[in-house]
Image (cartoon, rainbow, N blue to C red; front, side, top):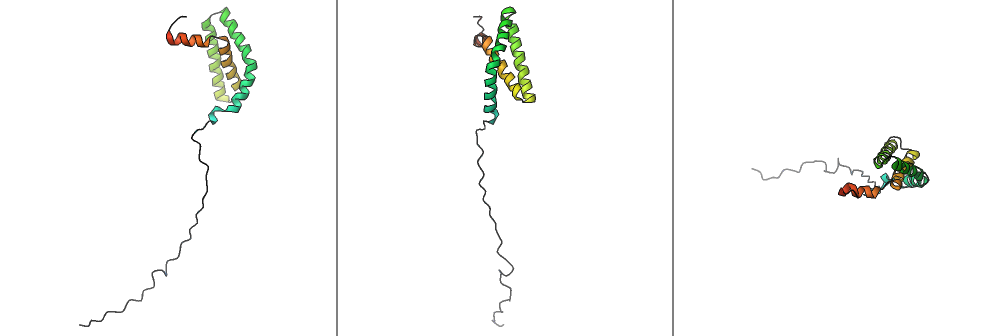
Length: 129
C-alpha cells in the first residue's frame, strides 16, 4: 500500500460565490407618544363656550328659580335635569359650538338656581335638613 496522500481537490474558494450584502440602515427618530393625553378635555373649546354661557346662564337660572318658587323643588330639578340631559345628547351627536354653550348654560344655570350642595348632602345622608 502506498502511503501517498492524495492531492487536495481543486474547489473554488469559499468566498468566490459569496458577495458582501448591501445593508442600508435608516434611523428615524419618532416622538414618543405622551402617556397623558388631555385632548379629550378640549380646553379652548370649553373655555370659549364657558365665557359665552356666563352671559346666558343667569337667564336659565332665573327661569329655574321662578319654577322652583311657583311649583315645587322636584319640578325645577326635573326641568334642570331634562334640559341638561338633552344638551349633553345634542352635544354628543352634533358637536357644535352652540351645543357646548347649551351644556354649560344648563349646568351653570342649575348650579346658580337650585340648592345643589344642600340636595347632595340630603341625598347622601337622608337628612331632610
